[in-house]
Image 1: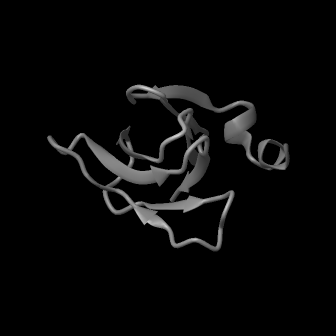
Image 2 (image 1 turned 180 degrees about the horizontal axis):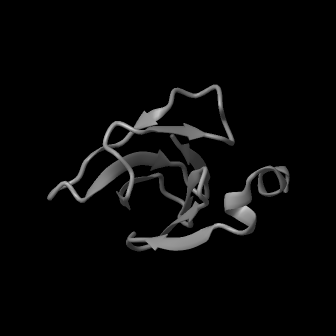
Length: 101
């Protein structure tokens, strides 16, 4: 709840589904100031997600706000150069909430 109270993107920001497969769910919440990606693994097996993020520059920093002490991920250029790609591991029945900067 604190994350929602502290960030406009979760209260009034735009919502966009990100393409996943199987038992994974991912979406972006965006405001003028911040972008967040929420990734969920609804499976008993760990998973690797590769998400296309339109409007996010390659090399952007993705910080896990649920575990800020972990090393940040970096986005890479996606095919065609119109989006960046974020690759991340999500544990079984787990979630990641990433702030994109």
